[in-house]
Image (cartoon, helix red, strand yellow):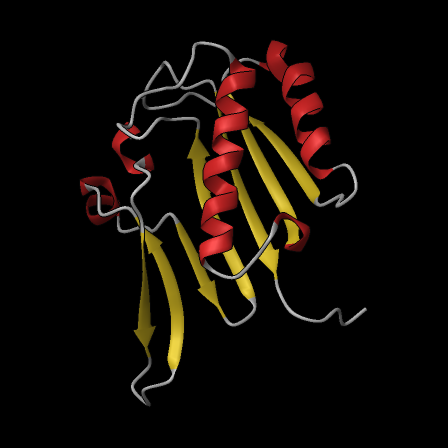
Length: 150
């Protein structure tokens, strides 16, 4: 689904029948969002979820053939989606990393650690096969905004 990562995004407000904002969506407007029925990111209340995000450029092409560069770009895209919905990396409570080759786990661990070491979200690593064989890694995230209830 390379097209799904285009830089141009829109935030849509979806309202409930009472007229209150029920959710906000970050969309790229690609055919895959319509075909599969998903958004880049969704906010409902104080919860923000970012779909699996690959390291693609503005034209939907894989940015490099190495996992590190792909993950760094995917984190940039994910961070932008969080920001558009009023969240930050510090709000992230869960990440999931999808990896084509487990031999790359040390590389992505370093990059994930650089990004989240002080935040320490719950994290899962899953080995998978991607629709586009050039994609080596994806990241998805869940964030909770607002005051801590701890």
